[in-house]
Length: 350
Ligand SMILES: NC(=O)C1=CN([C@@H]2O[C@H](COP(=O)(O)OP(=O)(O)OC[C@H]3O[C@@H](n4cnc5c(N)ncnc54)[C@H](OP(=O)(O)O)[C@@H]3O)[C@@H](O)[C@H]2O)C=CC1
Ligand SMILES: O=C(CO)COP(=O)(O)O
Ligand SMILES: [Zn+2]
Image (cartoon, rainbow, N blue to C red; front, top):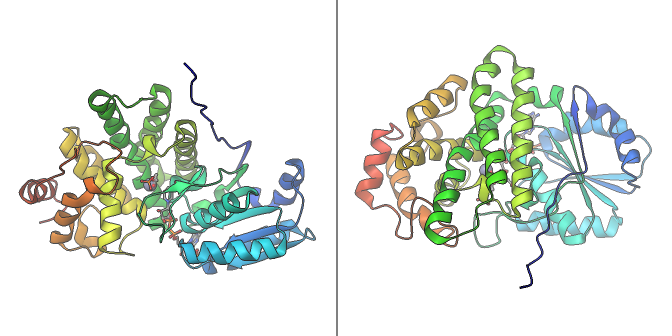
């Protein structure tokens, strides 16, 4: 029988360390990339990290474009600009939204993509997927994986603590995602990649240990966190889907994003989803909650402006967001009363 081709997208080179952003010109040259470069960034990052990048790029032909959010209108605008400018390479420098727009534009116009994260807030740093609003569903779609990642620890550790914590939250979610995947393989017969799942699980373990380190030594903690985020992205690249990194905890986060757009960072919502789904899976949710409190991640929905009823509603609709991906929520999802019980017992609502 002919086996279907499986393509694994992995970055060619990862540059990680203090002040690596100052060497970008040298890295681009060694990757055999030629100008023009289109630098995609956001309004805050443009004034800080992106200006360091521009110093390094020097006289390479380039243009800078700012994006406000990760939606399809922004993708179209940046894509048009990239075509007119005849960009050879797209460089995304910023948080998750900017990186997603840059990698999705690179995918659509088939150009190389370089990922320069300025906040360790999400595992889209490495993944060949992008979350773009306006494509119908709040879940990620196929995009261009980065040829290279340039992770400047000095830049990443000076990101606001809330963004750093969000990265811990996104990564803790893998404790659930891999369990949902394994469960699905037993119930639906879906392929389960042991190695890929182990890699995602390892990221979650590192995120857990990093909750102690971050309070003692921010740079050392961020370094561990960034490595965990990168490996989780590698797991997605190997699986060819976000399966190892996104299960029922992400479905809860997506449901909240749909009901309350703009409330809470992605990683904060995933972290709360992780407490709830750890309870449903029967694993030690208290340990996860303690770790979240240690770094200052919100553990109650009210802390990020979500009413108690909103949490219950999100729990009851989460299963319907991606029905093709089986999770502990099953095909029917949670009833209102069981959702309320779970949210109350875990202290997510009062
Ligand atoms: N593709 C994938 O596989 C994944 C994608 N995601 C997606 O990523 C997004 C979440 O990313 P997240 O980073 O949490 O949030 P956003 O990118 O939406 O926002 C981050 C904010 O922090 C600012 N910022 C970034 N770096 C710094 C810094 N060093 N100092 C000060 N401010 C900074 C940004 O500034 P500015 O205004 O300049 O942009 C922006 O305002 C979601 O859309 C989520 O769906 C999440 C996980 C995986
Ligand atoms: O956020 C992600 C992984 O952390 C991507 O997940 P989704 O595929 O559910 O959007
Ligand atoms: Zn995520």
